[in-house]
Image 1 (cartoon, one colour):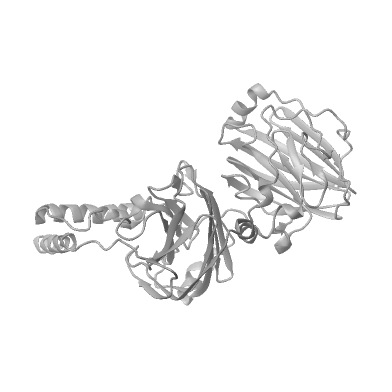
Image 2 (cartoon, rainbow, N blue to C red):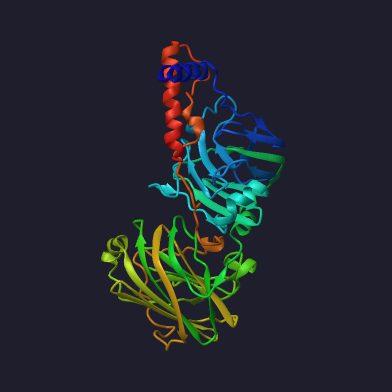
Length: 461
């Protein structure tokens, strides 16, 4: 029996190795029609070109024929098309339906649980219902935009949203190519439409919405600036809200740390900087948004003034080890009072807006290149003044006035797939990159068996 099984496996391996690998994708103006996918990356659509400064939107119906969260569509962004695309070496970004992804040889993106330029997804998917709903089928609308080395992905899957903004540390080609594949799924009724250089509109759509909750808990990992954020706690006139957490910087700059964001609108009414009131960085720096007249300490106008006893020569080393933080913000009419204990340091500011503020504000946590863990919140009455508005500014040694680069912020708390698995590369990379081969059958068999084993290991199911 064992001999029979080995013989059958060897024959299958030889047959697999003898057949040319079908990896190339052809360029098309629009993806249309239907696609049935059984094995991971086993069938693919043609690819649509996305130029720098453009956006492209895909609509289709996704139906899972499997039981796993990842048995669904996969979107792939590659740097080559046609015969030049042979697999993972030419891939830039692979995004699975279940809030997971990784990069390829044309970028430095890695999976959310890997080390490096990790992808940070945000979603409101209910993982207890996800697989069943996918088996029933859900309509999907995906918009992808490119601005230099930044890709923005915004997906509406049924009633859920899944979002990602990622900047490659490796320069991307001016034009990239997007196609769809998947695993154990039917993708039907494809349509495609293109937009112009509307990165701001795409970002606002991608990052719209701010969920309001009674209190915050849990952890938050933030990659690029404002790339993920917590839900928001409402702050009414005459109240204060206190945040407790540990902030650990994963970078080398003073500003790579937590940020406290304050807005005047929530829900779908919050779309970015236009609704922001105040942005407070950990390193004694900040600015306002469209709903206040606050400006950074080195700008002209109603500039923010900070008081701090931070030792900037020691600050970043301590931040990389992690600081316990207690930050309190209170509202009294148009006056906001901020007091933070960051490790053994204090940072304070009191600011009065020359523009009338709404009676209720919304406060959330975000940052840049940091881990914010053990979050808790509590509410109380308004604080006494800690700092006169004309107090001397003791700003970060390496302060940089970044106008709301935050003008495009992200939405809900980062939630990865309940059963997320970090597959290192697309299975396209598991096939030999050459399309034909001339070696002996025994060598083909060994290569095919090794490739099959690599697929099993890589998918980590």
